[in-house]
Amino acid sequence: MDPNERHWYAIYVKSRAEKKVAIELEAENVTYYLPLIKVLRSWTDRKKWVEEPLFKSYIFVYVNKSEYYKAIYVPNALKYVSFEKQAVIIPEQQIEAIKYFLEETEPPMPDEIDLKRGMMVEIIQGSMTGLKGELVEVNGKNRVKVQIDVVAKSITLQIPPSKLRVIE
Image (cartoon, rainbow, N blue to C red):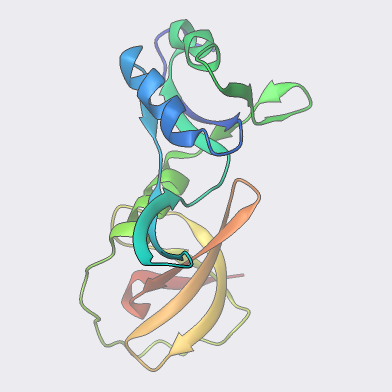
């Protein structure tokens, strides 16, 4: 690992401690990303919209070699998501896919591509160019849903067909 090169990693944290870890990372000046979604929670006496993590027990950090250990030693952080005892680098495109999923506001664009469920497609335009996934639904000619795997969980993005190409 180049000492100055930064990469995204996923940290597994204690249950329901994602926001606490985010506060600690902020205090340590570590760049992090905690994707949150609004969910309607019901209690016996009321209902309330609350923000909760999209990925329970995970937070993403963007660190270089010197920040690598600083990020994992904050309270409630347990371990880096790893494969064969090596922390897994999360591609920048997957982080962008999560952000796009949570902030999508782009209007639909009509297109004439003949797309079918199960096709593997690649995004060819926008901030997620190069990201690949499986086409899971075609919503008329204006939108398609593409499933993309991130941290052992899939997210589904609605994307205009004009931003996709079919891959073999």
